[in-house]
Length: 385
Image (cartoon, rainbow, N blue to C red):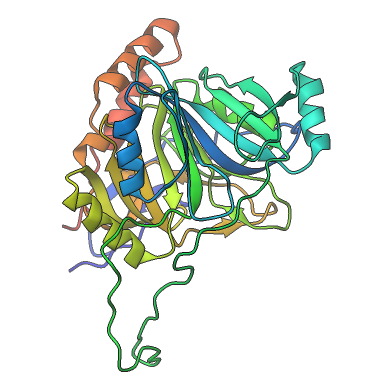
């Protein structure tokens, strides 16, 4: 088997042991850098997502099987939490269509919330949910609601396994006279990790989140002309490490929500959670594998209406001084190992086609851009196989 390495910062991607040059870039990645504005404030956490639901009972069953816990369920709303300290991470309200509504962030101080209110002219309101607090309600360029909160009281964590299972390596045997028997159960969700969105105006979306919430681009995937296509963005928490990304702004995947990701303790939790969801006959999308950018172990699922949810563990963290890095957009830069990426993740679907047609009409998408993207998506992630 040919051992392959990706040269992620150079102008070409070459696989040792093969004459194949995967991409000859017209301009190196970062030729069109994402310029960070001076932020109004710096968010400290991504804490919940907002949804509308026509069938609260069906989604409730999925979320329980996915590894969340009840907070509050009425005929008009559904609030769910994980096993960590956040009082909730999923907020659903009854509506005519199952759709993603928006995101909730935490401010690190009330002064930041006041600064955001004054800069936007939007009022500070009380939060009418468990944990209380205050909120400024914004709308991003995608039309998504963005709630920035302060003063939400933390909840007591729920008892569950907090540490990875003991691992025996060739030179270090930690587990003696005992087997490895993780239970077949939902993977306990510890917290919300990130949300991935797509838009024809991804640079405007990225700029909005940098300005209003202080997000930092960690890694940016670029097309052959050097233009950005996907920006993985993290919180600016100074010297305190933040996840590789809490928000992703991409282009070409349609408009709005693509998936959200929820952290579990380790690979065994992912694996047993996968078996449990398979036993419940949910639609498995992709995994188990390991990403390259962010390094997460991952496993993707669809809820009953086709919205993607991801379990992940062992992700990278960065402090605010880590520089933005630009890479060529390539299917093989998405994952290091695991099952091949499903063709459905690259092949245009109805949502993507509508977004592209809309972009062609309003000028945010060009035929040259489409041609470049199609060239990228046709590349093999593993040309040595």
